[in-house]
Image (cartoon, rainbow, N blue to C red; front, side, top):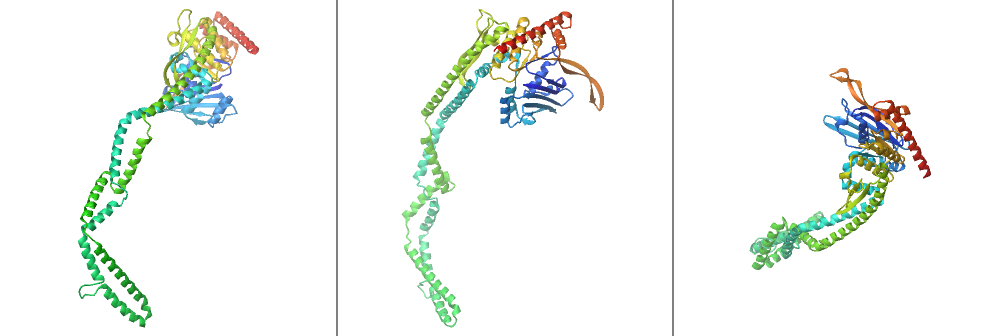
Length: 586
């Protein structure tokens, strides 16, 4: 429930603080007095769209602050947002709007905690619902009518709507997978051809050893230089071990050195390590000579093998140029291509299987939509009966109303197009409400609709902006009684020009414009100028209320207007007493 509204520098309001109460709170005043500005401020503090125009001329900052009394459900939601209540049950919602250069900035806070727009949107739905005759545009929108019906249907409908939304997402995913497969099937076949060719080519090359290319190059060098290698190995053998001429070999020289050192060791044992080295060297040289001789003797010219090596090197060079830059890279590409080919040929679902999957998901969606449609038809029948019951006291005794539900393409919200069909006069066919209802009929319809919703889960505060425009007499009285009836369940704020409605108020505010002299600074020279401001007075006694009602009724406080106002107040009190008695009986 909205307890206090404080406004600073908002449109024509310089400073204003209003304290609202339970029941029916009514704001009256002449046309253009600024009543709607107060409702605009409520809309703004709850996250509504604002522009630089809401900031009072001559200032660069506007502040709107609303204090609400929180119920247990709101307290629980705030706890989830990690926001503590003040004094156990108070929530202060504030919004500061400022202008710098050409930019408009705003900050919203809940009990001093900065919050984003998403949080404010969720909070707004829990705190206040604003109804204006301009909502007749929404009545013609199937999506809005659908949302209203779903809320009216209670918790079961929104829950099953979530089921439909989930089924729709699953179907969309299956449909997208099928369409992507169909779109890419030609590319997939081309990719299959390419991968198959590469795997075949690389497989035929028998690529096993990443060092094969270097080894073949080495073998080719050996086979190409067999004669040179034989000659040089024989030459080394002669130098080390056996010379055909008279020259001494390395082993001869080492043998002489070994003999000399043996004699020297006889006289100096410290030379023994050197003798050991000579002996080891002699052994090593003999081994080298033996192995180089064997190497040379085993060398044979093999033109056929050389041709095979040359052919293999050419083949590997071709592979490396296409899949390299090294043979190891080509082998890695071969392994990777085999895996990709296996994935395309073995793991990919066929178009047929994807079509089956899409159909199964679509069937599940249709089944969920059909269930949702049944729930909506049930809620629609209930709304039809209740709304007609609410409209009859509003001078619409013969009204016909139907929630028309026709099938449409399934979406995340179901497969229903919902239209409110309406006939206010006997003998006239049902037609779309938005196309046939007059202004007064639309006002009464919206009021009756909100009365139906007041019995469901709805915000604690309902705001009606001139919902009684276009009506008078008995209809206005019926609207007044209906507003007061709704205020038994929820706090109601109502802007009205109807004295019949204002007379039913539990708390009455008069809104007016005044011209004041305000000191302003201009070019560093202070001077006073006339400014228009909005002022609100609480009419807290019968005399003030009577005068305001007389003003609304007759435009002046003539005796007949005063008498009419007195009769309205007496009639309003009688109605309140009757409602209270009926409530006790229930």
